[in-house]
Length: 582
Image (cartoon, rainbow, N blue to C red; front, side, top):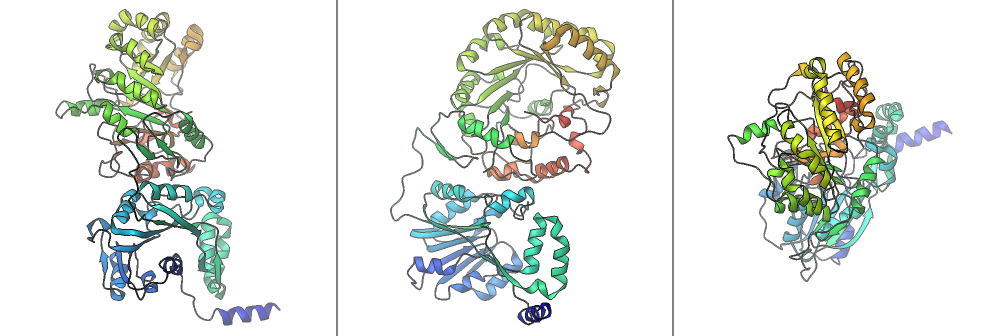
């Protein structure tokens, strides 16, 4: 029986079976148009033009970015444009059907693509989108090994819910959806399975080297989804009015209006907390929970170890960058920041921003927890207003340069709204003048502050000095820790020092945190004092998934997740490397 089976397989697999591209059923499209002829169809990302061959009686058009396959398509069809779709020119409302097969998840701006489809389609025309389904059972079981998670090839990930919302946002009506069945050779199917389940690699080698690899199989794990939307015959009302904004949030839900509760933000945080950290995080799963907002590049103090000092140095020769209430509204209506739970207002000195109190009020009514870090020099004038606007927490940073003034004002500030305080520990002061630090802690406690947090010195800013780093085994630090803990008990919050031995890479800043400046530039970590290139990641011009999964971010995440990889250079001197956050 075994020999008969092998003989049957050898006869059945005598010829190599060509790999079939995953394409939606062309008959479904023809059936929608009742098998009419002489219609106009555009295939975005048409590859070699094979899909368009299924419409011999239609006027076919295609756009292909890759030149080699585009030339093949041009040999089959005359109306093929090779290049970026933004450079292609077509008449408005010209096409009856536009298909996007295995292309939308490669785009860094899917909203632009769907908006373009809406402008090119006739009323009653349809858009057909096929992508991988990030919510399928296979993706759930395999996690980060799901074969479709392959940046930078796939930049954006979808499920049925977000596809429907994407269509609705751009004034399409949902028509139908289906899950694609794919025909594969056995060796190709095993190769894909081995990417998720490494124990199948030996089977892959056997399949590739024998006739068994050519056995055709059909699979449908709901990992490929096609959705069809129709452009209404009459124009839909705009998705917003003058006093209300509707946006597609990172959790895949719609939020309308300026006011927003904490429910979506807490749910976003819980999805982060109970998800495995992966190199690529689709925004349909969660978006950052903590946003550091650089309110201004102006400051009324000068501190060498400030992580904003490079921006402040630049501000001396450049125009001032400053947040306004309108800019904050725009930023926190974006899908990327809509569901952030905590907003940190930083600088420079945030109290130099004229609309600072109104900004706090807006964030409060939008459901965000709001923290401000300030040097406290202008706090007496603003503390009542900030309290009335609903600020959650204020941290006053104590420096040698503001200590004298704070000794006059901090106690009165705490009578209105008790604040937290912080101080930066440096090696020189711990070794030579620890009593000065104890006096500062005593002052903060006697002024009725809620706590004092020590920050470990990080070699950032203009005059970064590696000699000032405080390590966990520094004898002066350990002695100071004992004395201060015994004297002030629970008043002090102690961070972990930098370990000199093997370090556990537990930091989750790259999953939980993001920074922005007034121009919308993106900072990926509080320990990295420069921003991503604005032409690659900008809050106001770039899709959320592209921002959250920038190649630099993905590279750092991979290094942090790999126990065998070295500590990234950017993290070597950061004491938060072993801190899992909250």
